[in-house]
Image (cartoon, rainbow, N blue to C red; front, side, top):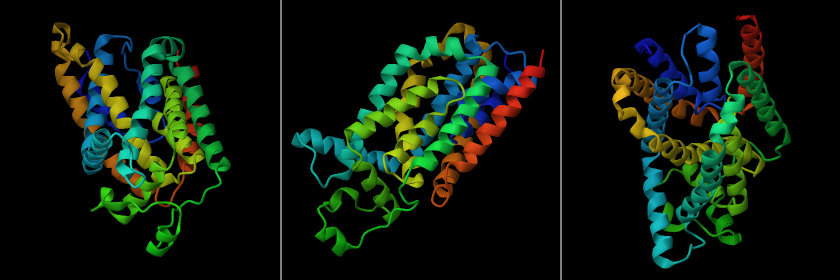
Length: 311
């Protein structure tokens, strides 16, 4: 049985590491072994706890961006009603880009999740891929050539440019959010597809879902803040759908004794995810992925050394 303390720690771990670009799955595979917990990670109870914590993360992300999701749903509705996407409808564009980016991650996840995790879901391999994740983050920061901040253009500049003004679709939105959402809406479907496909790498423990999507955003021309925003929006349907598909297993008779642990883990994950999202959106206003890259490399090396010493 999973103890309540173990469930709380794993819940906090999931809520933080799912959104920080440092791999939640990698830490969930590595740390129980280092802590000396006698947990069978292939056991339905452990998998059930992961499902509960992932679902809580998805719910919190949805509530955190609820105003954005309302505008996205309205934009999708307008495009379906009009049978076209207006050039000035930022949220219709954003909604369809999220759908496009979700498709490859969803399909690849369904097809490859079991074989990939069967090959790579060991603590030592996860620690090695954590190092790889850090190197990927560092390389992306070095390769990208865009400035760190997007400058909000003046109204005269917008009117005289070939880019249409946002229009009524983004009323009551802060200037920063408006700029971010407008930048995302200009990505194009090919880049959105590429960002979505990049997330498939996160099926390997040690590779971060938010990290790969942010790297894709940076290499597509977004700044750190906007790439993080798109990553969090994109994570909501992917994490939520993956957890919802396995949700019935939490209510099976053999899970009765574990439901208290599931609830504790979910609550801790939700609280951690809320504060992690709030922190990261502010952090990436001025900072880059480099600190997380350094952490992943150092932690991966330390974890690998510890795991080699553990009998």
